[in-house]
Length: 171
Image (cartoon, rainbow, N blue to C red; front, side, top):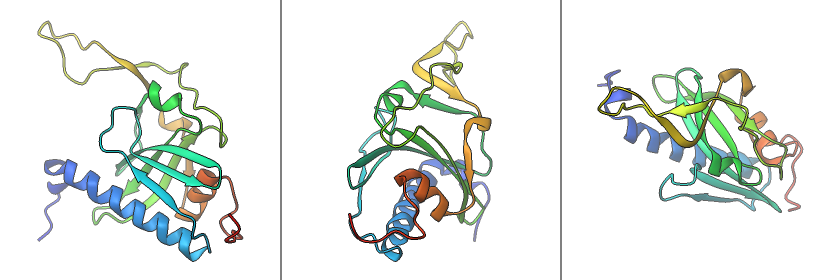
């Protein structure tokens, strides 16, 4: 039986489930649009600010995935911002882990993500003196900077820089 506490008591498991669901839905979506040249790579750990690498043709996107019931300020790594085409996808979740809407912050495909103008992130845990120091190489990106995508078609079109409605298997 479902217990709403699962969402926070098992947040690491939920994060893994959502990542797998997203990858599966993204690959299925590309398949149904006739794109069979799919490459999605998973990072073993989040040391460089991204969870996935998605490629299509010559475009390579480093993607940080975040999820939750509502979009909040997101801490973004400078390492991700230094990657060409780095971006953050926030996946809206319902209680049953149905996904959508999606939110994206990115530069144009091929360009770097600019986060220097945003507030530095503070660590979540304070030092013994009670002060939360700044988290090295991270900036807080407010929800207003994310673009909303109601469905996976719109999100994948923005991620890959093409119209997924008319995509063909030419790449």
